[in-house]
Length: 404
Ligand SMILES: [Zn+2]
Image 1 (cartoon, rainbow, N blue to C red):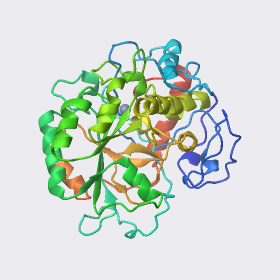
Image 2 (tube, helix red, strand yellow):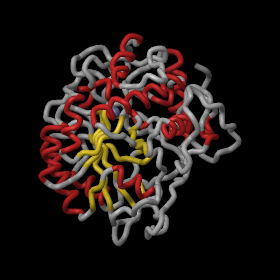
Image 3 (cartoon, rainbow, N blue to C red):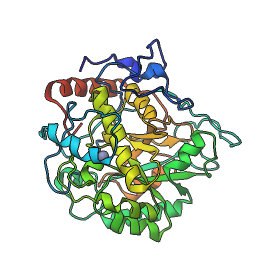
């Protein structure tokens, strides 16, 4: 690994002067129309991007309580050519050394989100309201798009994920608030269609997303959504769900990879949340390619169709991570940012709002009304950038860790 890259680049998105480095790992060029510029790709290893603290999305651990496989670079080597599922499970394991010291349960990760305007082609034929003044309410055709990020929904979560867990009762109250708001729940594909100019978003959309793949997801959580006719999007950490897989997630009850197709049939769109839940902006190019490609391949094998969407673990991303995500075949990627998204958000770091156990129905109603958080896109602030640098340096010294 090399040294941390300069702070700007990643966050700036201004494309300033960064040469489009050589394609690595046979990755091929960045697909046109993604809004990701070659110059965004930093050749340097530790990438980050930055931004503001996003909450760390602690994720789940592997069910079997095995050591998290931190996919260290060595281990996580992208094996080109070999893609498939099988790999996802094995690779990661061996090499990894479990470093869990930092599994702080409630740490906040930052989100890497950054700057950059959204390159999104606003499409054709769509009545795109002019860029939303931050904080705009939702009267009329609001361009504000609340994207909620849930983790587990249960009464007695493991301590490390408790901060990001809501009870079934809280969850039901939140869903009722969503229904009352009159917003139209959509999945990430609808956002992708909009950003690509293929189809307009419905008026006042809202997204419900679930990270990691906890055991409640295909059970009571999916049922609560289905009862209200609410579609949602699930981003799964394949190493934590696959038999024999490894991830950096501390132990927690997780769903199984075998249940993914059924989860999709229940109304949940499936996206990738990488193999091991690594902080992508601290990985080598090979390790990063592995996390992006192997998780995608595993899910595609399980579902029998392409998986086009990604969620960055902890929200951490960087220009390089975003460029590699586009090259790996993802059409969108969600970050965290603790912000409201908008219909002109950045396609490779769509802002989300992490729902914590302390959030009230009033908080949820505020977000649904388009208030209570800033509206993306916007550039990363100095804190986010500084935090990214710290994490990169730490990763160089201590290796992969779960928490931000
Ligand atoms: Zn996660």
